[in-house]
Image (cartoon, rainbow over all chains, first blue to last red; front, side, top):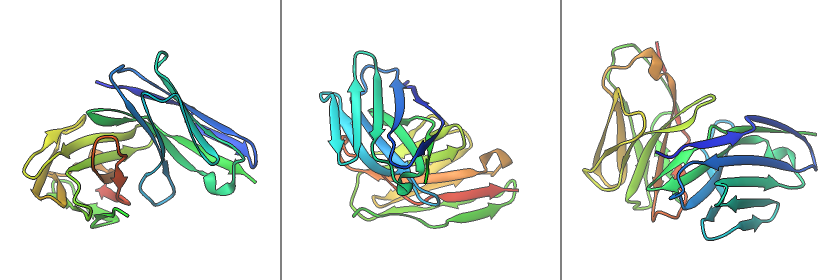
Length: 109
Length: 112
């Protein structure tokens, strides 16, 4: 089955700087890659996603890149703000979603 | 917006009890899922269902069962709760395959 690895497990960034979270997947058949943000006391919420026929997607301060050859995908957050502090999960989809182990992002004011 | 509602935010149960976790979604989604979330392990799929009366085992089904009698409701059952089932349980629903799932707020279950 699919295996998704996510790094780093924790990340601290100065407010205003950029944050990058990286994931790798094992099953080349995976064709959809969403990212979720989980705030304290809440369920994960979809923030951005990318399909396998696209290399990059951007939504305001958030962008995701996909390298299908290397089976890598990454989340980039620019101009970080305190409200970006949360746990972020990547996932890969082929018939079902498989999640990474999460990254706790802390924005330092 | 799709809403996925889990009946309890916190539960404390005793070892050996039968536990029911309820999940209801209001957007007529075919697909529903139960995940377990543990620190350092991410979200692991317990069971899922693509239709009423249908269920499929996920990655960690041992010790659990599910019921889907109606499209909007998907229940997770712990037949005989054990302490290693202490965890956060998340229900999700989803439509067509390329759309991300919508999660409930979770149920934090403690088995003592």
